[in-house]
Image (cartoon, one colour):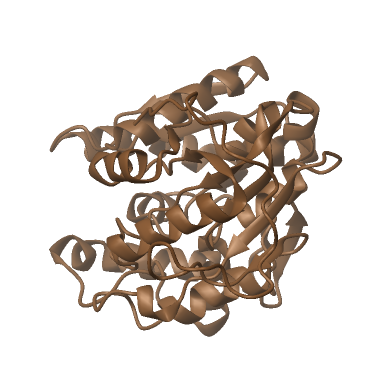
Length: 356
């Protein structure tokens, strides 16, 4: 949703209808509601679809959107891995297709498209379920629709990710110009901030290893706040708050906007995720530094996809304008690795609030 607004700002698009296929997750819904407000403030029409609200919802949503999709000359999509989006792509004959940035998933999308592979999220592991098999024909048709071809105009990819798309994919650079114009510059705090990830929730990283790493980052860099990923569980966030003393904050907007609006720490610490690519752009011209902490292979669970280690390493290795930190100590109280950067601030003890 944020990147749709960024694309519209770059392309000076004015006649735009944004369709939200509302998810079930409450935190994601909340962020989308707030982003819908911003989109309306920019003069765009927003259509909120309860696409997953019961057995009849898919047919109702598809029936309502089909006439618009058939008339549209340009269609912009935000998640090419979504089975819903793949189904809707089969209903449009638009000559112009634009895929807007979906974070690190964009990197995997480009790789799979170039190799002619099925569009499957990088952390998925194992066989397909009944719903995957049901949507398989739509997925194949969507892949063909998104792939370059002689009889169709080039698909455009609007992204801030470091990608090397195949021939026929036009790349548009997302510099977060709308975000910088709309928000900030932020007020800076003395301490550092940690950005959470959903690597535990997706079964990639062991929860105890993750908690230990978060505690080590907080101790070594004087972090005071933990910005939760929208998919992080309440149980895990409660542990982080009680065992590390960090103030856990659930943002109501994407982190790029939260950081740009401020207040924000002079150092933002993250594990491999989208923000190590987007925050340096959103915070350009400020004194905020971004650092990324590697994921040690020993943190991965037995359920992690075989691609997990390589993918996460690629996310970190291709990040620009960030400090790269070694994996945090694996045991509580361990000394930071030799050469680790010094802390940029000290926790403001006694003034932390836990919100999860």
